[in-house]
Image (tube, rainbow, N blue to C red; front, side, top):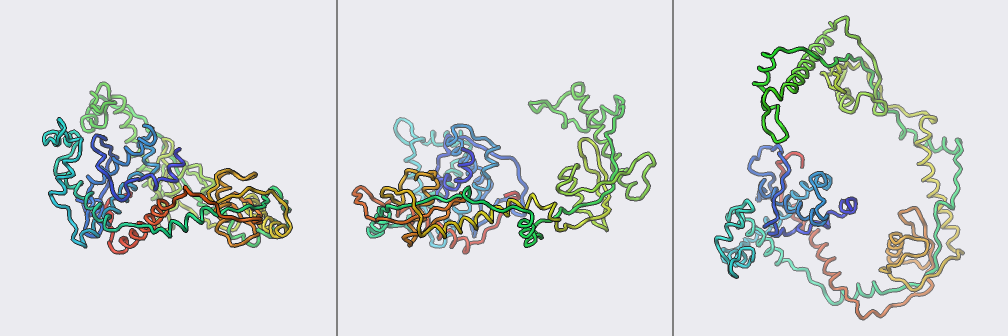
Length: 488
């Protein structure tokens, strides 16, 4: 379910053009704090339209509720991060801002009367069968919203609707007839499926080596780094009550229970001592770092050597990234913590990437060689078999036939039919994504008489999608977009 939704998430956001007022009664979801650029009052600006943090939070909350409903209550903040829900929310508002700029350029507006008519029609604000002003205020208050905020948002939604209403997408009868005809063309074909299991490939070292020679610069060793380092183990000290009390009083907000309440010293004492030891360990490591740089290490501290790379890195990714940032002019890295031990590192030498020997690269070369040679041989087999092949015969099939063809999955059948009905060849072969080739020969063709077929809705959806994409690209080029929130 998660994978499917991630792949199709752009189709799940039903409010890309017009977000509704469905947040009434839906609750509110946030996502923490972000850093801002110079525009503290807005998270983004599109043309002359600013997008506020409040709008972003409400849109995020609305999308969160939609996903949670689709996943039957199994949606959480972790999944929201996986789906990039924050980015979706911002993108939705940016797309709306394009339309608002367009509306402003044509002096479109929503009058107070139009706004009031819509508010009065919302039954969530009714009491005893009629609109009630007190109920209106109460419902908005329960959703942490003032009438002004609600009316501003609703006015914007109505303006979006009015703008889109001026850009209708219509379908002609001829367009529907053309699509209806295309979808009712039926072919009876003879076909044969070829797969890589029918292919044998010579994988001798002589063949592999020749393939490796042609592309050996694609198989490189990792950049490696020769380093010296010293370790600073955790410091454990004894502290008198005065030192413990003094540190607690200065840092008491560090020590809280599960409900966020500050712990009394008696309950926090162990954590205070631990924090004091952590601070002492870091201070000692920094002094060792300075001595290391000056060549004045204490004789009791042992210097070790190691060569690290992306594929041979016992110190972890964070340490490797620090090492990469070092140079001949700045060879020392400040202490970095690895498994409760501080490492102070000196870069001695950087070894650049080099082409691997054939022996070292063989395991990487083999799958690439097999893939290429199998593909070549499969095409060769298809070309040699095309004129004379004998295979299975289908009934009359159309581009929208639902049953899987014998030897193909439903997905493979759909892919094959799509390519078959866009081909202008009577006898040919079609390559599928799953590394199969289907030889085919059209034996007979006819037009089905499907009186119930009506493709006007399909044409309208297709034209609407194409129009929306074209409009969006035009507006993107016309109105500059600035994003002031970091991380999105």
